[in-house]
Image (cartoon, rainbow, N blue to C red; front, side, top):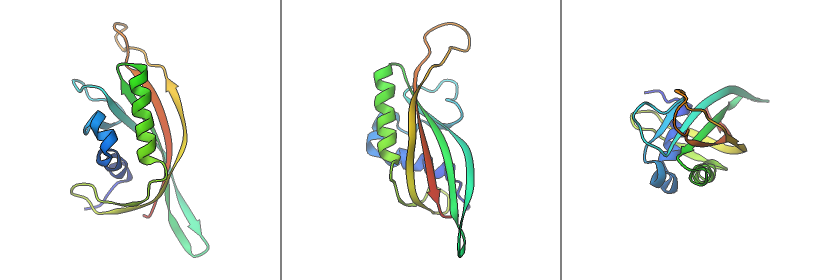
Length: 140
């Protein structure tokens, strides 16, 4: 079965013991599903770009923004650091459950920022959020 780079990113995070100790498997595309608890990580793939070499296609890069969410700022910041540590300079072959393997050549940390969220219904205190941006280089 084919594999998507988003599945690989998620697998790297939930396979990291320090990240998994905080979020278990709560890594979601775009938003946290209703009823799920925090802490959690939400990711968005911003763009992909093929890499060309003198001998032809040399793989693909994918830029991701990951939002690390928790009830307190310090906890969200700690989760973001663990996510960054798990991804920065990662390389290896990843095989998500039920999918083909994908080779990740490297992951570069592009930056991190605080994110201010507003409650959608205007009530309560929103979760605290810290973003981690990475570029993942992989063989296609």
